[in-house]
Amino acid sequence: MAAATPMSPWGSGTPDIVVGPLDLAARVDEALVVQAHAFGLSQDEIDVRRHIVLRHLDDPGARSFGAVAADGRLVGFVYGLPNSRTHWWSTVVEPYLRVTGSEDWLDDSFVITELHVHPEFQQRGIGRSLITTITDTVDLPRSILSAIDTDSPARGLYRALGYQDLARQVLFPSAPKPYAVMGAPLPLRRRG
Ligand SMILES: CC(C)(COP(=O)(O)OP(=O)(O)OC[C@H]1O[C@@H](n2cnc3c(N)ncnc32)[C@H](O)[C@@H]1OP(=O)(O)O)[C@@H](O)C(=O)NCCC(=O)NCCS
Image (cartoon, rainbow, N blue to C red; front, side, top):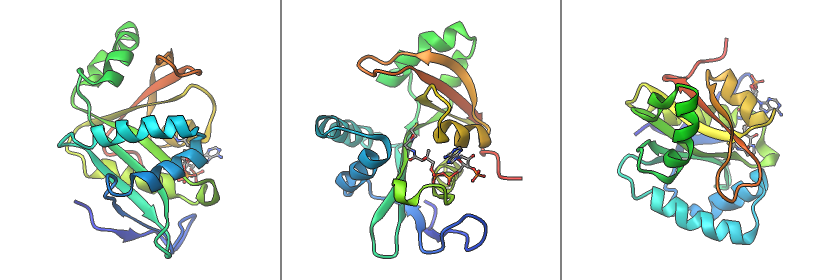
């Protein structure tokens, strides 16, 4: 497991924020507060997500990293796990990837399940640090994820890291907006 490291004191980094391994099961409620602020979740959605996150963490390949402020407050987190074609997410996206000829991305791939930074701490390099830190610990050749199919900061970040669209307008049951599925070779592309 990677050691906790203070973020770069130069560039857009935030020196008082430490990115390191996170016991997400123990801090799931704090993480969901961050997600609720960053992504917008109702209390009902938080309750559902809580069960889903804890179930994902039972996977032996699951890992999570957090960004923690000097006062101990969790201000961002990321978690993911190696993809399995039996996972619900994978069964939803598989037909879309088959159509675009990118179905093989479901194998030997690390899924970024959630990445969120509290709005007060965004645009300081924390999201980039979280996702590059977690994927650097992964012994797989590639990473996949889904993001709402719109021109968002998340899509901008993923493209900057080398993620490309594998399928678009992907509909998840009960999600009101369509998603894009994106994939990138590992290690992720660095700035410059
Ligand atoms: C996506 C998210 C995690 C990015 O976190 P962040 O800490 O603000 O991102 P960073 O400061 O590390 O930015 C890294 C890159 O992302 C892109 N980016 C970040 N904010 C952006 C914005 N407002 N507009 C366009 N691009 C943006 C840029 O490419 C940026 O690189 P640069 O600093 O070299 O320009 C954060 O915006 C967030 O939590 N959003 C809401 C929740 C969400 O959408 N999560 C993803 C679900 S799929």
